[in-house]
Amino acid sequence: MKKLIVAASCALALIAGGASAQERNLRIAFDVPYEPFEYKDENGELTGFEVELAEAMCEEMNANCEFVIQAWDGMIPGLLARKFDLIMSSMSITPERAERVLFSEPYYNTPGGWFARNDFSTDVTDMDAMKGKTVGVQRGTTMDTYVTENMGGIVTIKRYTTADDMVLDLEGERLDAVFVDYPVGEQTILSKEGFKEVGESVKLGEGVGVAMRQRDADLAKEVNAALSTLKEDGTYDEIMKKYFNYDIKM
Image 1 (spheres, rainbow, N blue to C red):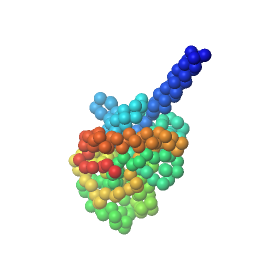
Image 2: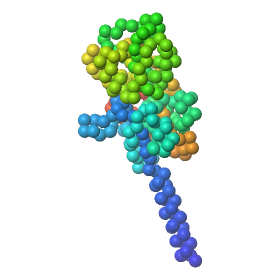
Image 3: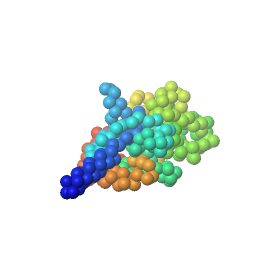
C-alpha cells in the first residue's frame, strides 16, 4: 500500500510538474519592424529594446518563450484567437483596449512626435494652416486615434501597416508630415538627412503595457513581478541605455 501511495504521489508530482512546464511555454508577439523597439538586425536576428526586455523577463519567469511576428492590426485578434499569449509591442494602455485585453503595469512611456522634411514650415497645431495637408500614421495606434480625433476632416490621413512604409512615403513626398512614437521617428527619420522634428511632442495614454487575455490574471502577476525585479536590479536600465539617450521608464 505504501508503495502504491508513493507511486501515486510521484505520478501526481510529475503531472503537476508537466502542467507547470506547459504554463511556462509562452508565445510573445511583436510587430516588426518598429525600430528601436523590435526589428531585425543585419544578420536577420530579431532584436530591439522590447525584444531584449522580453528575453530578460522570460529568464526571470523561468519561461520558455517563442517570439512571433504579427502585423499590428492583427495583434488583439491574434491574442484572443490564442495564436500567442502576450503582446509586447509598444501597445499603449487605453480604456478601449482594456475592455478586450488585460494589461500589465506600464513598463515605459514615450510621447508621439511630429516629423517632416526640412522644407515643411507649417505649425502642426494651427488647424487652418494644416488644412489640406496629408499626415501619415500607423494604423490602429494611439497616434492614429489622436490625429483622427483632433484633425479628422482637416487633414488627409493616410494609415500604414508598418512604420517603414510610412517613412518611405514621407521620403517620396507623398506625405507632408507623420505622427509616430517619438523614438521610432528619432531612429527612422531623424537619422536620415533632410528631415526634422516639427512641433512639440505629445504625451499619449497611460504608458505601454504587456497585453494578455483577460482570464490570464495569474500570468499578469508573474509578468508584473518579473518586470519589477528587472527595474530594481538594474537590468531594465542596462537594456534601455543600449537604445535610448533618455529615460523612458515609468
